[in-house]
Length: 234
Image 1: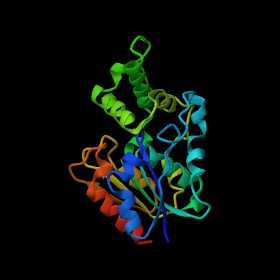
Image 2: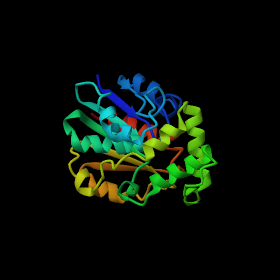
Image 3: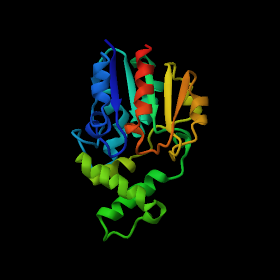
Image 4: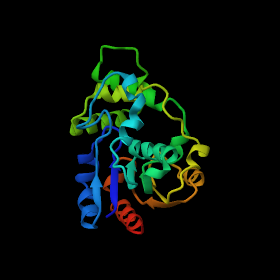
């Protein structure tokens, strides 16, 4: 039986990202054993509010894996985490599916800090030391809504975004990924374009999700169908 691990996105949870849209039921019906943990700082996982606690973010995710190699699906933050770990520990994975990531993985434009500042300003309005104006309010509101629905501490989310320098993804790093990989990206997703990521991963295939933005990606039937077909090909 194929074991599939699912890692959700920023401010999400296993329940909201995977169970509610039907991923877990569909993968189980296809005969797969599904593991869907909450990432550090999210859902049922510990939610520390000290940025230094998130230095071990990827290691926390790695510890949720069983000892045998698994297939894995990641969305957004979960996709980035999956790619980091697949490059560092290729023996732990058989097939990889990532959604909601593209050229954005190579950008180092301070967007995480800007989002942290904007969220801080939203929940601590008396503190004027932020750069909240740099982050579109609709995106801030969306993450606030996601966090509320997922039962997550906003201060934990801010701490995660402000964590010490995490692993920097480069084309050279991603060239170490040896597993068959499917990259799914919505045609209106701000994470694109998709081409730089496809060029960096040696055995990557792609699917473009029509009329799909970043936040609707996990609910895309096209994404679910493509992932199921790709995983069943193992």
